[in-house]
Image 1 (cartoon, helix red, strand yellow):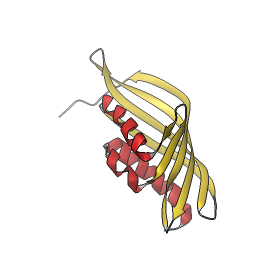
Image 2 (cartoon, one colour):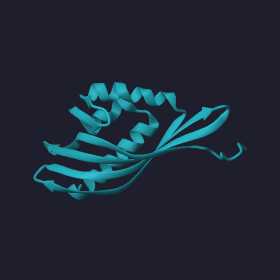
Image 3 (cartoon, one colour):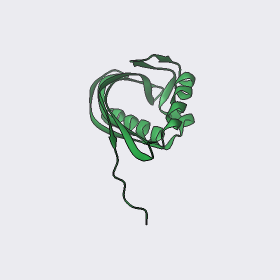
Image 4 (cartoon, one colour):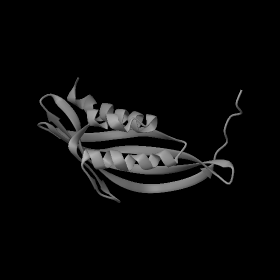
Length: 138
């Protein structure tokens, strides 16, 4: 796979793993010393996986990955990934969602031919909670 496709592929895999709540598979895209920085600090992949359990408080999530841009220097990539993360939940017997506008500052490292996230810095740009209009079940 071309190095240029790696950041997009890893970001999309991250979104899929999180939305499917397959947290134990994060090791396929993150190094053991992975860290999430920003509005909070989580060091180590095991600690990150444990922290992701809080997403079980939501009925579901949907991450929309957008603009991905950055540069490689040898086997180290530094760049940005834009994302809108939607978190669905019930409040007052009505369906709601919390949307979060996020920019991740990503560091990806290739080791022995395998590329994984080394760190992501979480920068929340905005958030909004809305009542959802859901389709009627058939």
